[in-house]
Length: 166
Image (cartoon, rainbow, N blue to C red):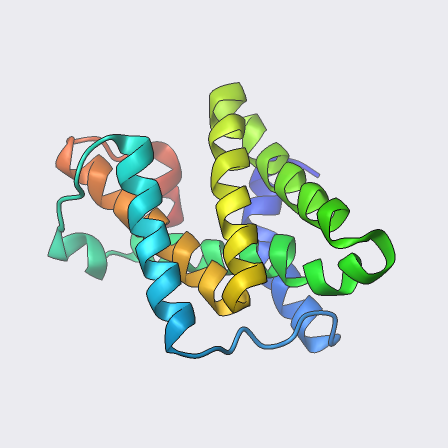
């Protein structure tokens, strides 16, 4: 499946997994929101090597909301089924499959450097999923993506993927 097609089909695939009952609703408590938000922030600071600059216009942009929906879909697709896969395969195998699959889906557009970055971020998102549940992973991924959008805006760069998302 071409990468661009996959990118736009993710929400439908994620919804299908939830409707089919393969993935439970990403509901959680306050700890999922706090740990997820702090993890997304820490990942951004670690990888971008700078403190994020908040751009209110970025929060209102369609591109940001599209990035959030894709982050949620990624987590449902790559981490949501982790619990159903971990029983037959074992938890370590399930985590490795989800992290490597997540990184490989980003390789066509972002190359080897992007895939390596997504191995790291996917590992963190998987750890959060195992710690506080799917909602924590969704919040971490979403907050990380929003900070990336704002970082690109503050640098005067909005790449094609972000423009296309809006």
